Image 1 (spheres, rainbow, N blue to C red):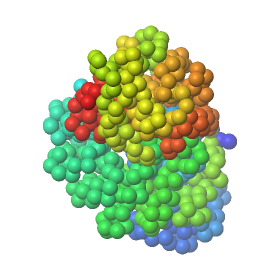
Image 2 (tube, helix red, strand yellow):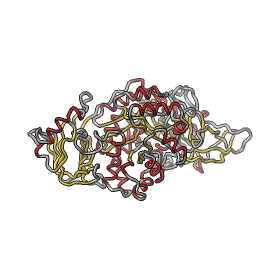
Image 3 (cartoon, rainbow, N blue to C red):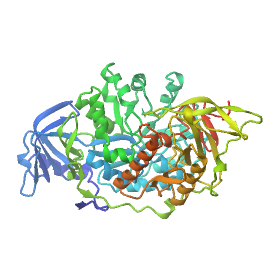
Image 4 (cartoon, rainbow, N blue to C red):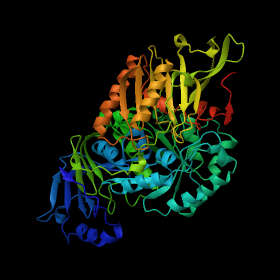
Amino acid sequence: MATHRRTGSHLLTWAEVAPRLVDVATGRRPADLVVRNGRWVNVHSGEIIDGIDLAVSGGRFAYCGRDASHAIGPDTVVVDAAGRYLVPGLCDAHMHVESGMVTVTEFCRAVIPHGTTSMFIDPHEIANVLGLPGVRLMHDEAMAMPVNVHVQMPSCVPSAPGLETPGATLGVADVAEAMQWPNIIGLGEVMNFPGVIANDPLMVGEIAETAKAGKTIGGHYASPDLGLPFHGYVAGGPQDDHEGTRPEDVVARVRQGMKAMLRLGSAWYDVASQIRAVTEQGIDPRHVILCTDDSHSGTLVQEGHMDRVLRHAIAQGLRPVTAIQMATLNTAEHFGLEREIGSIAPGRRADFLIVSNLPELVIDEVYARGVRVAAAGKLEIDIPAYDYPDECRNTVHLGKPLSAGDFDIAAPAGANTARVRVIGVIENQAPTKALEADLPVEDGLVGMDRRNDVCQIALVERHRGTGGVTNAFVSGFRYVEDCAIASTVAHDSHHMIVVGTNKQDMALAANRLAEVGGGVVLFSKGRELALVEMPIAGLMSDERAEIVAEKAARLTKAMRDMGCTLNNAYMQHSLLALVVIPELRISDLGLVDVTTFQKVDLFV
């Protein structure tokens, strides 16, 4: 296995290599690589063209045409495509590496065999824990990769000021500084959509700095209201949005000049419903982009990445070429990189796939910058582990060990029952429901209602060691056994979320994560059933993706053994503190009604 070197491995710019490309294209110089007899999936023209050769030099395409024999010299590597499809390397337009539970390096190792050669990552998870230094760490790691990993500067840390307390904060000056870094492609999803609508100076300033730098402004309008608030948000500058769930969301965004991003992550299934805007209503697909947003490590290793999204989109009735445009050229154009990535055409980086079955996207070989990096689903290069410094570790500070009593919920004085607000989980979607339930009171404490699927949720402060615990109730996990699951991945402020049917197990789970420096753990009746350690900022493992996926699989099985049959329930668990997506969430400051962006009392 070849080793990707971290120094001297970056691609020459087009200007540096252009004379060489001209010489190769005209037969005056041999190519480094020639691929013969392929079926060219041309995302510019929307055609599939038979009998095409590709010539590559200096990591870029020099010639795409009927016969590249003029570019073959004694040292040219010649590959016979044998009538297979030549597809541009796939792009993920919006994603969070941390959701994979692994580092940038391990994420790349996992997805390269699935044909992903370009990613646009928003590291706002680590930003909420470590601030700007954490963003810089992931920026620098991204630059060392053998594929294209561009970074969006996180825009909302915290995501909802006044409604949560992150481990760090970012402001206009931080955004202005980051816009000068070489690998920053734009501003990450602007989740504080009420702030944009209200002309909040922080949001206005960050968007202005990004526009001044000539970079792309990511959007996140998590509301079904397409009236004046939506129009105000678009006028405020965001250029794309991935929070739609309905066909009308696609239509509204495209008509207003935005790019509609449709996501298929591990737990977000928003493509099938929204793609009808294209297949049934005729919306121009060139303004629609596919992405993953959040992919669990198990999904990456077992099911795939952008290839999985494409197969799903094609199954909904899209022409394969159209689906591929949505995951290649559309993305490149949106970020101003159409002369670099997103297509097989002269001058572009030689990132491409050899595919034997187009509708099912069976990927035989993956090339990045003109080098074969994977074949038959296996990585063929070694990417050395990135060395994260000690200050990224030991970030879980509880202040004191927790006990079962920390999860007690005192009832209103004299009450025999209590009517409470309950967070309702919606399977395969990011939004929650704002539910209510009448719960029993015993010895002055509000109890759970396991028969009706109401168990307890707690948000444990972990950045400053305050010892703070916010307690509430959640429904939808269907746990039937005594158990508790705790996670330091708790979008977006990343405190600790604990969900359980047994307070003693809740305390054990929380304390265990403090002991290992973060991650996710499941306890039942005092026994640890599954643990995924994530010592880097309490968000990422430093182990290989395959190992993390195995541990995650044990976690999934343990959750099912406890009665939870939700698809990718851990992902649903990790978003219960995301106070920018309706309807009801939990934060270190209390329950939050995200339809009004107001804190609300637990008791109705």
